[in-house]
Image 1: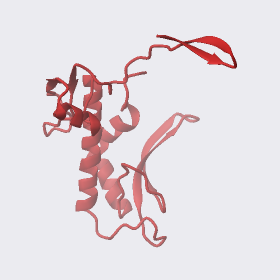
Image 2 (image 1 turned 90 degrees about the vertical axis):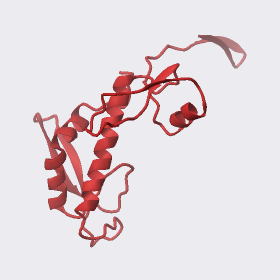
Image 3 (image 1 turned 180 degrees about the vertical axis):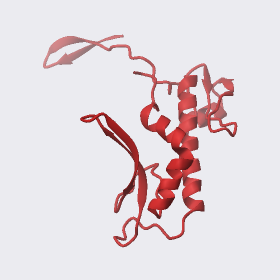
Image 4 (image 1 turned 45 degrees about the vertical axis):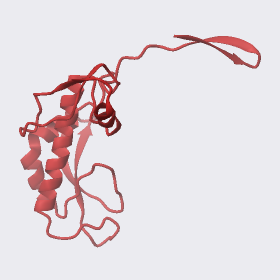
Length: 166
């Protein structure tokens, strides 16, 4: 696509590079977040049209033009929800991120490129609230969650991609 733009009386042609799709674009057919109970969705319905339901799915972010991205996002969202349930079911004390006396832990991934070492780790946190972070009230509960979700956590930290552009 080519446009003419003018800067200080001089006309320039603006040439936009065509970018590879992200997998989030509107499309004639699309896939939605779906989970068949295994944690990894393999059966996706493909929908056509541009009706109210389609627009609603797009608006809330459950609309993918690329099936691989739909699978990635379904697995990531499922992991997040299952880990939150695990944290809630095993929680013994109230979590208050702004109380310095309250112990709060997260699961993190450390990748030390200097020494070719990586590990999933439990880290204490305080006064930081991040979107889509799962908080645990004890180091032991976070460590148990690592064991419970190890395979999905390794996938998430090492393979998960939220775009198909690259």
